[in-house]
Amino acid sequence: MKKVFIFFFLFLFSGCSINSIMLFGELDKIHIVKHSSYVKHYRAYFQRRNLKNITHGKKYLYFYNKRSKDFAILLHPKHKYILYSFLHSGSNIKIRSDKKHSYYRMIKILKRKGYRVTSPHAVGYTAKVSLRRYKKVKTLLVNVKSYQHLQNIYRKAIKTYNAKKVKNIKTRLPKVLIESYYKKYKAEASTPKQFKELNIIAIKLHLNKSILTTEEREDTEPLTSTETRETTETITKQQYDYYLKNASYSELNNYLSTSEAKNRLKYAQYNTLKRRNSQLQEQELLQNSSLEELITAYKKNKNPHYKSKIMQRIKEIQKNK
Image (tube, rainbow, N blue to C red):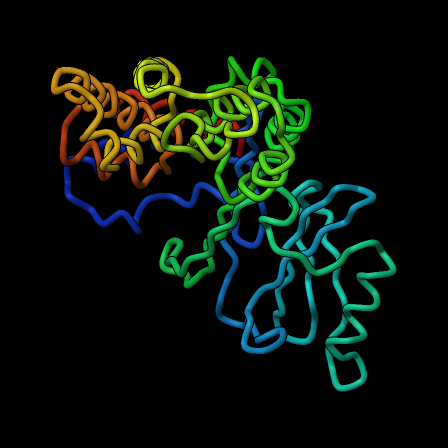
């Protein structure tokens, strides 16, 4: 342990390259980075050196098993296909690959096991793949987040036109995972109460910019200009309170960049939200950044909070070895 801390301080104050830091995770293995009540964040570094195209120039494919609810990524190293499970880390499926064992045979084998090709968004996931070097090794960096539980909660709220089900949720659900579902039930809504509940949900999801339009309510009750103005002011206040107290960093950051925020908010409100955004940005960096990213940030800002977090991460690494 003493050697680790000596190395750490030498690294911080000698200006060494980030690539020289110790290896703190294994290649070709999926790790859980963060696990909250609503989101699971997975990360993996896969070696690129021997990866072959699977089909149509693609280096990877996603699969989903409805029975086991398992989401997985398929890669094609030399002479085999490997399906890496996100739900059951380490339980990989390996399938031989040669002239007698084609792509279509591999698809059939996985199909018999319950796995079918999918897109992340179709099954409540988001995924991002980028080219990175991991301790000088060329890799595919795969970041995957599961929003299935949160998506189901929002779907129930939308289907039952009951915003109370999501009232206290602070975690953001990406629009791409819920927008089409929301639009379906919005088209089926017929009463003022249903429209009101959907609009509250839409504000949390950032699917609407304003309260109900006249066209949406023309078959129910008349809407005077005074009522519209008062309702819009109420919604703006609701939005401001939500972004000030409940919004995540990504939600607030996106909102502040919109013309709606700049045009509707008062000068003092906008500046208050900007300060809140800076606080959330720092929290996000401290909680979710990699060790290398924390060290890079610390070398720039010399903030003691970052130093404490780096020390904590190194202790965790040593403990898990």
